[in-house]
Length: 348
Image (cartoon, rainbow, N blue to C red; front, top):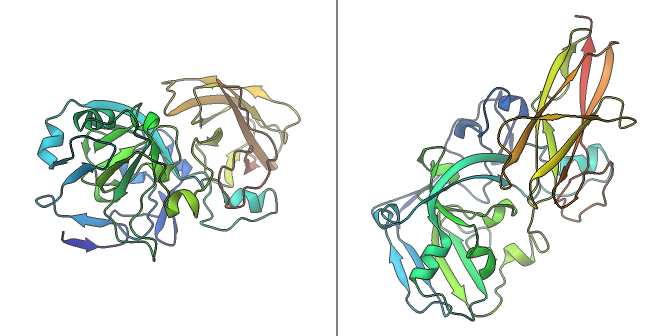
């Protein structure tokens, strides 16, 4: 299969992205006024190597392994002709928020120093993975499903691949070929990718080319070395506001943000303007989807100038709530403490 290897294909203007050594983080102020979904042009990019450009004429998706009775191979047209589902879902890097272990808790963690912008919510369309597995006759004793990407091999570890339990694969996972109403762009997995709602982004394999079904537990570097103990994403919140934004004093301001959790719907969002001494309930608006995020807003009229800190905390339907400080994860994953967002209030 011919591949023209590049880094990131799409434009990365400074007002939309912060670039981290081959990866691109969305700036949260770029979401202001953008509606529910993250526009494709500002959706974050996390690559282990580089974005491949795949020859659609020779591309095939294989479903095989001892856990299926009928191995199969599909081309792009085959997938487009199958029953489809549309899903609004978030994809988020496991390391989203990693830099706050350093800047807030003064205990830095290794890895890409993401702020909160390694997340995006898109409208995905594709074939439910359970449909493909059922077509191939998944066996009753199947245990794991191993999707593999077609980007270049990562160092000596091979192609990116991370197993899913059969129960999750047969639940809500999508083999997506559309993003926000159009064919997947190269950076986001063309021709098809997995979308695994609620789970860390590495599970949503891009440039999907192979699905192996096993009758035993499977292990790869992506569930032993790099992401050994992370699956479901925790609760987080972000303001749709520039870092160190300058805001006017006196006049009422409408502050907006979004909160999300891989465990379930967000049921409460609170905002603090005094470093957590008091909290005000934010109002919800827009969609309230279990697989995506909850937009919210709160009105505030600052009464004195100077540096201030905005804080937002969310609670999901399982009762999980953001705390002010959390234990450090050794790989810098799952930072779900309340983020302290600095601003400057000036005379209007």
